[in-house]
Length: 288
Length: 315
Ligand SMILES: Nc1ncnc2c1ncn2[C@@H]1O[C@H](COP(=O)(O)OP(=O)(O)O)[C@@H](O)[C@H]1O
Ligand SMILES: [Mg+2]
Image (cartoon, rainbow over all chains, first blue to last red; front, side, top):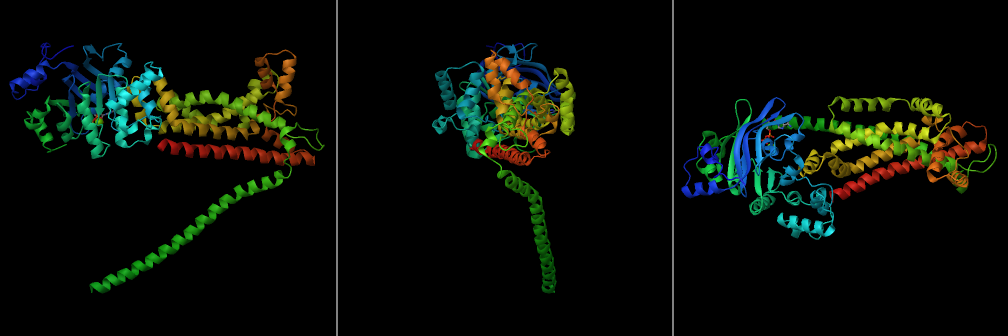
C-alpha cells in the first residue's frame, strides 16, 4: 500500500494546503498514514457544467475524513465519484484520477462491480429495501454468490452487530426493514453496506434526516467503524465534522460555480487555525 | 369611538359569517345530491341484473353445455371455460411485453424510444376494440383459415397492453430512485436491481393493474366477434379425452385447445340476448350476472390487496 511518506513525487496534503506549521509529532504521524484513496486533479461534469474542478486530496486509511462546504458546492458529486456512482447520471463524466489501493478506478475498462463492493455507500435518507431486515442485509452477500444459510446467518449477525443494531432487531429479523424507526433504518443501511465486506464506507449526510439522539448513535458508529474501515462523510453540519472527523476538506464554488477544494487538513487545525479566509468565514458561521 | 368601530366591524363580520355558513350548507347538500345521482345508475344496474339474472341461476347453469335453442335447461359451462382460457392467454401474451415496455418508459422517459412507447400506448388505448378484433381477424384468422381462442387471446392481450404499461410505468415511477441507487451501490447489475428491488417495491400496484386489465378484458365482446367467434361445444374435458384417445401428447392437446373457436361470457350474452327464445334471454341475464359478479370480485379483491399490502409494508 502506498503511504504519504514514500510517495514524495507529489506534495503532501499538509504541505500543499500550506498548513500552519503543524507540531512535529503530528506531522510525523500524518506522513506515515497510508493513503487509501488518492484523488488527483478530479473534475466532474454534468454535460457541459463543471460541478467540481481539479480536486486533489489524499484520503488516509482508517480515519474519518469529512467533506464540508455550502449547499451545492459539489460534496455529493465528489463523494459519488469515489465508487463510480457518477456513472448513473446520464451525461456526467469525470476527468482526472481516483486511485483506490493503487488502482485508478476511473481508468478505461475498469469493472464497477468490484469497486462498489470495496467502496460501500450510505445515503442521506434511510433507504432500506421493502424486504425483511434479514433480507436487506443478506442482499449484498447473495449478490456475490453466498447461498448457504449458515453463512448468511453469520454475515447478517456480524453486520448488524457492527452497525450497533443487533440487540434491537435480533428477535424480529423477518419483519420488514421499513417498519423500523428512521435511525434504526439508517443503521440497517449501514449494516447492509458492511455485509459485502467493503474497506471504504462513503456516507452522504447520513444523519441529516434523523433526530439528535439517532444522530449521536450514527456518529458513535462512525468512530467505532474507523478501526476497520476508511470513512468518508459529507456533512453540512460543522459541529458534526468537528465531532467525528479526523480530517476535514472544505469545498466552495468558484466564479464559474465549479466546486473547488479550498483547504484540507486535520480537523482541529481546519477549525481552529484555518489558513484561508474563506475557510475561516465558513467554519465561524459567517456564511453558508 | 373605537368601541363603535369595532362593534360595527363585528356585526359586518357576523353577517358575512352567516352568509358563508348558508352557502356552505347549500353546497354540501348539492354535492351530496349529485354524488347520489352518480351512484344511482351503478346500484340500479347491479340491482336490476341481480333481480333479472338471479331467478335463472341454477347449478346446471354453471356446469352444463348449452342445449339446443328453444329447449329448457343447459348452461354456459362452455363460455365459462372459454373465458378462463381467453383470460389466461391474454395475460400470458400481455404481461412480458407490457412489463418490459413499462420498464423502458420509466427508466428512459426522455429518449426517442421512451417517448414513442408512451405515445403509442396512448394511441393504442384509444383504438376501438372492434378494430383490434378486425386486425387479428386479418392477421391470424384469415392466415390460419379458422377462428380460434388463440386469436381471441391475442386480441384481448393487445387490449390490455395499454392498461398494463401505464399502471406499471406509474408504479415504477413511484418507487424511490434511492432504492435503485442503494442496490446499484452494492454492485448489483441493473437487471437484478430491477427484478429484485424495483419490481417487488412496485409489486402491489403492478398486480392491481394487471388484475384490473384482466377484469376489463374479460368483459369485452367486440374483439372476440371476429376472433374467438363462439363455440357451444367447447369443453376442456372432452377435448383432452378425445386428444388422448387419438394418441396426442400434452403439447399437441394444448395446441388443439387453443386452436378451437371458443365462447366467452360476454359473447354468449350478446348472442343469446338477440335470440327469439325466452330460455336464451333468461340465460343471457344470468350470464350478465355472473360476468358482473366476476368483474366486481376481481376489482374488490385487487383494491383490498393494495390496502392490505400497503399496511403490511408500513409495518
Ligand atoms: N444529476 C445532476 N445533473 C446536473 N447537475 C447536477 C446533478 N447533480 C448535481 N448537480 C449540480 O452540481 C452541483 C453540485 O451538486 P452536489 O454535488 O449535489 O452539491 P452538494 O452535495 O454539495 O450540495 C450543483 O450545482 C448541482 O445543481
Ligand atoms: Mg449533497
